[in-house]
Image 1 (cartoon, rainbow, N blue to C red):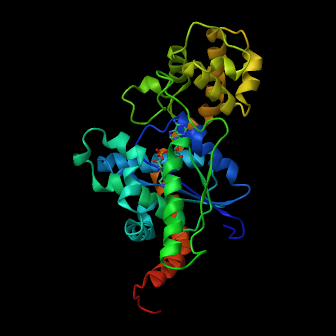
Image 2 (image 1 turned 180 degrees about the vertical axis):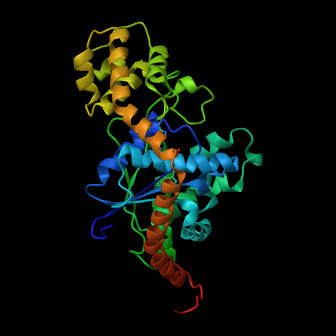
Image 3 (image 1 turned 90 degrees about the vertical axis):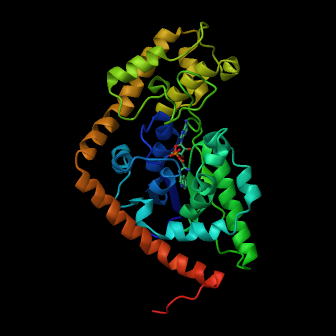
Length: 339
Ligand code: TYM
């Protein structure tokens, strides 16, 4: 991996049901960024266990997310694919960040409020401190660019605040950079197929609400056919979709899959009924996702290969993080054996 290019870091949780939102909001961008950046893509298994994961399923899901990265087009030789728990520097830096971040900052995290729901007292401490670990993931490499979907922008803001406070508290002004979010113009917020006001999510109990990366053509066709819409034909500009969230979402998905703007898609379909639009959206989806799903299937059938990729990636990731952590420990005042 060239160390001259700026560094990209991003992560995906191995919690099952990778879906079109993960692909269009993040993974597709991972692939594009390989040309201009050195990239680290992490399967964040330590984040996953902030809510209960059955151990066998966690192992399968970890291999599946790594397979999805490779199947989508990330090159694990030029760039780095690894799982978080194989690089202990993430946890070490996260502890230091637990002591830098303020409780008031974490109290403002909307994702914690959503995930913990009304049962906050029973949520794990890990779920609460999760954004500190996410900051450590990025800053253990001094990564400067972070491709994410819109739902992660608040966590990234927190990572910036932590970097800034660390630099100020310890009097090391340029120690950690301010990482920047990279959002997709179309695709940063893909919504549920059943409710255009809710984001598409791995944890939605209805499988009909999302298109999974490993859905076959029939499943994709069925889900798009059943996706909620409204009785009006499609307008010719996005302004005409202001109060039609489901229609807006489907147009956004089409635009993202076809690398167009939503207005370009609407020009193509102005006045069309949903039946015609949905048929074309299905073809496009099957065309883009079919090969990825097939390759994921092939890779997940070869766990030894995928685990080899993760182990080699972890060794290369550690080679970057270890010297940075040594500097962190020194700045903080920890005594370490001298080599
Ligand atoms: P996770 O695993 O929930 O999602 C992985 C990526 O997919 C994006 N995403 C979406 N984008 C558009 N529309 C949607 N409906 C949608 N749903 C999910 C997410 O924004 C994310 O980019 N905390 C992170 C994982 C993480 C991470 C990191 C990311 C841990 N450490 C460091 C970046 C840098 C998460 O839970 O993503």
